[in-house]
Image (cartoon, rainbow, N blue to C red; front, side):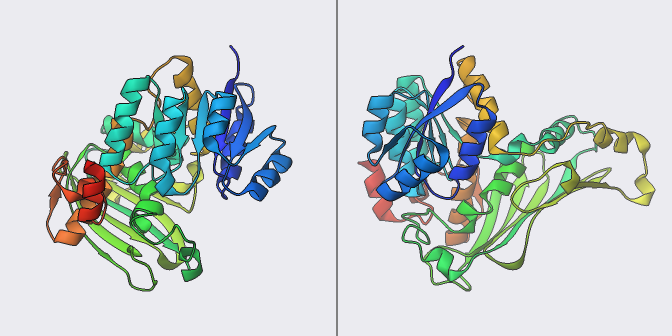
Length: 365
């Protein structure tokens, strides 16, 4: 089987993770081109990583190189149009988070998928670690009993200088604050492991940055299985940590990490009144250890391409986090609880996370 031909659109800092993933899967892929609007940056990346073709016009690159898979790592506001044009050019797409601005844009991408027969997947590498996969199976089989109480906290820190980049800090260009750009990884990870969520109530605030979007969000969630979760997404926390706690009927599982995890970042605990070696054995059976990484997710996307099947973190599996975050923002702006499935095309929050009529008008054209 011939190697899949890959190009990258964008040359920001995350490019190192994508090129590492490509090199790790080099027996299955080859990187043939990159494009970015900054010509000097294109030349630098091509020289550093020995890439044959560099462009400042991504349409020319798509037309001339005819790639099988396009990695999109450009600023968020460019994602939707680049995804659509890449699908129409005959490629599959793997795009950094957030995939797009809104449910309206996501549904337009889905329409293009249906028209072309190609797929767009989102980078959510946390789903692909050994411990995460193991945890999802344990939840599905109720090995620890029913999940009851969850805490999903992204306590990170970002300076004002970080937000002074032109495409950051606004709903139009970045789509939101840490809810959409920092905590989105852990929130997606939790939602993926759990049954479907049912309703969310939330507050957001901008406490210590000169930006339009929030620098803190706090939410309460009720799941379909009646479990409850609290979520904090913060850009205000000097001691940074990514923390997930899941309390079941028979055990507590905790994940303490930062940007990635391996098995050693997870711990199992229980109450003295609940000591049960059989329950602990369900956790201890995990005998492989690999990080949730771009490398691993790319490998599984390539598996899907080989079998012409929908790739992981696409379709409904990619829409879930966008609908959840749109609902979180709607709750924060309106002061109402928001139920899953309630944001439809007649709702301004279907078009943007701050529910602006302007975006609704643009989306309906």
